[in-house]
Length: 419
Image (cartoon, helix red, strand yellow):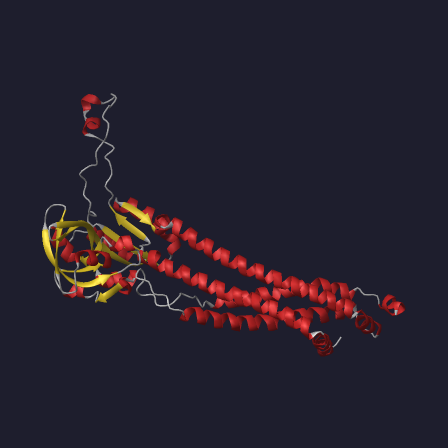
């Protein structure tokens, strides 16, 4: 049968019960709107949290961990071979904390095609001297340019300029919590003492705020050269190498390979942040589940409305079939009605969902823990809109299929005889 004719009939039936059709379309619109708004907000929140943790975490971190020595000297002595060693409470060895032959390691890592980039780092426990009080803390020596390029360091410097660490000798960027404890303003000089008793005055050139308050109460940053000077170490002294890969999924395998190759410890991002990633996945799963449930509920509304339409239009269906329309034609008419409701409701829902997302994105969100975030986070990923309209069509098609099949099986003789 002519598709245009079938479309005209579907339009007439749709408009004949326009109030019920409008209710069905509103149900789809509401479902899609909430699906888009909820998914955009939840994924925006996930991205924000990922930025706080994952963006600041190396895909693979190379370091030397201080750990007990499994072989005490007595185990190596020929005289005691074959005997039982009763030594207990084995102490940590005096092995070096720095990466051995760090220059060669960095050259090898740079030549690896799987590596996007790397950033050397020195971690040093220190005491901040505030008058007669010493405050526990840590200073990290970093390559500022690489740290900003690969780990977004510059985004967390809330006052001052990160490049001042490189351009100004003996300078430091204090964690905001540390600065508050020391009452240190930009331009002030703070005294920092190492565990070996070495003391060095450092000029404050900025504040750092990660969004994790406990971290900001102890952590500060200086250039690698400054920390080497503070510790009295040579210019090849590096304790950590933070590596960023082109493919995050390769991190566990690359970490194991590097640990064996360079004879050091390695930690991959999946191991370091497994619990955090689980939380993000669960939040996203909940968002998708809620959105899909809303669409299914809207689908039941369309199903009920089409069922009522079929009962009301039995005479019309009988006349259509008596005048030459096949069961397939009748089925196409009612599926067309369902899809029309789904398309109109879905597109309207996408528009309202986008508007609500814009509205959420404008709501002020000011907190001392996240100084760089000014409004609530929203993700405008186009795939959410594609998923929304596809689920809208699938749901409305499924809701219209069974009533349409019922309509296609109507016997016109039985209906007309009953009249």
